[in-house]
Image 1 (cartoon, rainbow, N blue to C red):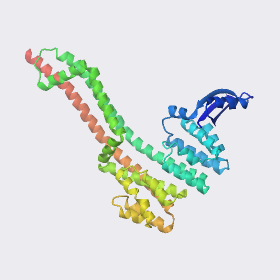
Image 2 (cartoon, rainbow, N blue to C red):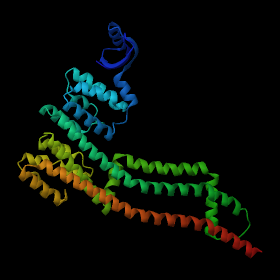
Image 3 (spheres, rainbow, N blue to C red):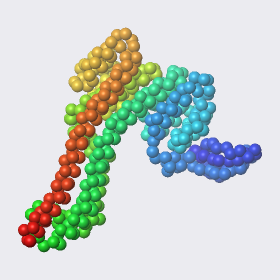
Image 4 (cartoon, helix red, strand yellow):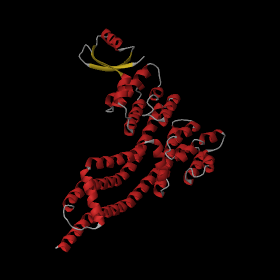
Length: 403
């Protein structure tokens, strides 16, 4: 039967809000009236979620959710009560409705992992596997604690990557805006003035002024084509097949390749460490870890790790056999962790190390990109100035020769 959310007023005049399961809205209204509640609104829960909340729950929201839930579970609060407190406090409408759903089904006897599995866009395989392991081992509070730390580290890493791209993005947008203004407004105005003068001009100057006049006369068409090209380029990055092709070429660049290797190494180490700490068997953990890797070649290699462990091989031996999979430092450290029985601890240390390496690499790349962008801007602006001033000199020269 479908779920319905309702708002009603009780005999004391207080507003109550909850989720119920019923065949239809009329059945909900009848049930609420029997409980002496004045019905205010009744809405279909599933359709409301689909229509209003197509976006996902952010990483920072999930990290806060895990941290608060771990704290409340350690304090001895029952899971439904802890979820209800978070539901009332959270500002995320999507998370609020997911918690509505979770509380309802947990009270009906379902597990939290089975409810969250319906929201795979918001909760990935790592999240669900750890929650399920915590439920089976009775250490759900520890699983949420590990998850909060893992999500927070992942959020900080992604923010560092995004912040390093802000400066180049601003410069590129400024260059496009400069070209937009010059081609759309400055050059057409100059063309209208200078082409009316009956003077001899060089072929390049005449071509440029005619081009400016054409742009001015067909401004809507020109900008339509201009923005269509920009939209097409953005679409290439959004579509999965073309994004894979672009990514494969970008990965061949030395700086990008190094940063991506370190990013994937950090993700693999931290995810595997967190899963092992939560009590997930190593073969299941390796299957989940393969999905967090971004490089297609490395991801396909990682999918074979669990089958090798199933045959009795150690993880370090499997990594040695894989060509260009992970750095030697990672393999040697994993071998040490296997011998000492502290694999999850050394993996966590490795994750911290490679996350710092990513930060350093991004800072170096930004320091290298900044002067290159400044040089590009200088060339672009200089070219624009020359293109705009050269017609004036040509026309002044033509006027002087005519006189």
